[in-house]
Amino acid sequence: MIAVDTNIVVRLLVRDDPAQNAQAAAIFRDSRVLLLVSVLMETEWVLRSRYRVPRAAILDGLRRLIGLDQVTLDQPTIIARALDAFGTGLDLADALHLAASGEATEFATFDRALAGAATALRLVPPVRLCGA
Image (cartoon, helix red, strand yellow):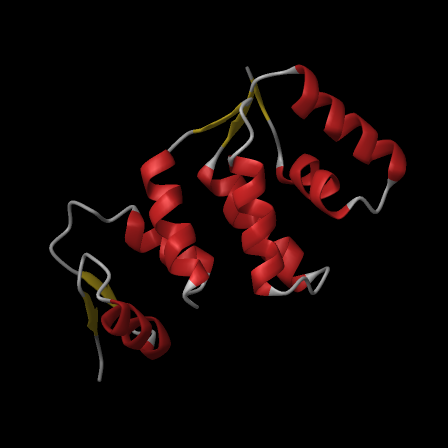
């Protein structure tokens, strides 16, 4: 099994460099691939900030990627929960933080947008807005 860096995933999804895209595609075609939570989080950030890819396209690309038979996720339950929350409008990094906090009784933040969205979506653990 091969763990891949963000740049491999981005090349596969964006296809902006034919030589690197071919190498990335070969890895995914010829090997079992381990995708880490941190790589998915960074991939979303790169696609959004550098390439200006819309949220729906990012979500679709990530879901197609993790659905490949040869892909193994390091934390499949956390990733699935986070992508669901991302699909409803939550920031992916925030969604991953919440999804990884499953054993906590609360998630404390100063981020009003996160607290409001998480509360509206009834995500767990409950989010407590601090400093309000």
